[in-house]
Amino acid sequence: MKDKFLGIFLGFAGYTIFVFLDSIIKKYLVQDYPVLEINFYICLFSLIPISIALQFITGWGVLINNKVHIQLFRGFLGLICAAIIINSFKEHAFSEIYPILFSAPLILTLLSYFVLKEKVGPRRVIAVLVGFIGVLIVSRPGTIHFTFSLFLLFIGAIILAVNVLLIRMYANNQSSVAFAFYGFVTGLVLSAVFAYNTYVPLIGNDIYIFLACGIIAGTGGLCISAASKSLESSLFAPLQYFQLLAGFVFGYLFFSDLPDFFEILGSVIISLSGLFIIYREYKIGLRPYVSKESRVRDVINRGH
Image 1 (cartoon, rainbow, N blue to C red):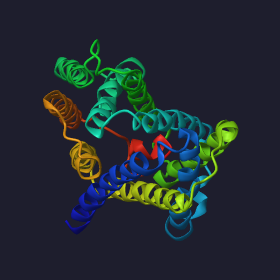
Image 2 (spheres, rainbow, N blue to C red; image 1 turned 180 degrees about the horizontal axis):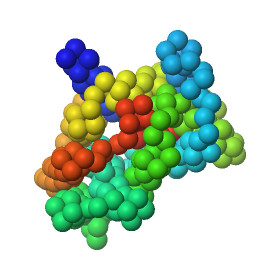
Image 3 (cartoon, one colour; image 1 turned 120 degrees about the vertical axis):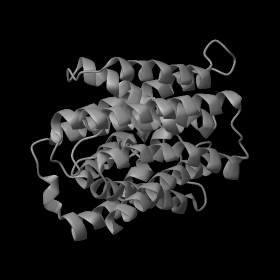
């Protein structure tokens, strides 16, 4: 019982940490530095807590496996997703960004049907369709509210879903810390390559902000990794929707942003649809993610 409560606490803490991280990036960094440069420093400094975990908890041997190419590819996808999300901070509030990203579980259900040939019954199909209605309500295509950044966020949600699909396909017994390590290392290397020509010298003490962001990112990933090992999928998976609520709270505390009626309505619809899909997968014996040893929060693989 203690392990369960600890797992729930770590899950809430991890998702709160990631929203806090996004708040710092949005408030202090995104207007002054290129997106890939931001991602480079965060990936670099995130390796501090990840390396500590490898040294004292899991051991470095977990990095040795026959799925390195899959992990590197997921890291590449994570870099693209990170760039999309960080770029969206320039124009949009969390109450617009997070609901669209949380369409990823809906997309994953469709991908699982077409790629993994999983049976998807009519109730989950209806839940997916209703969830996408929620996405349309939040993004409001065809209005001045809808921007190219919001469209790219939907692409980011597809990438998040593909990342989880790759876990289901290839990584049932891989360490979640190894996933985090390879994701951050891949993001670090690729960000350095693509950000070289747009590098902006650091201003004042911003290096310490980047250092804090990296440590926060790595720590948040480890918290969620630990939570995933302590909880059954049916309890762990719904915790991710706490990030939607945390996004509303931090959006108000940091930026005085209040969600409008459409953002609240769409978020509720998306959340209820996603939770229903999780419930149905639990009832029929499917697990929303994979084994306890390999479940990792998708945000780890965003690259920050």
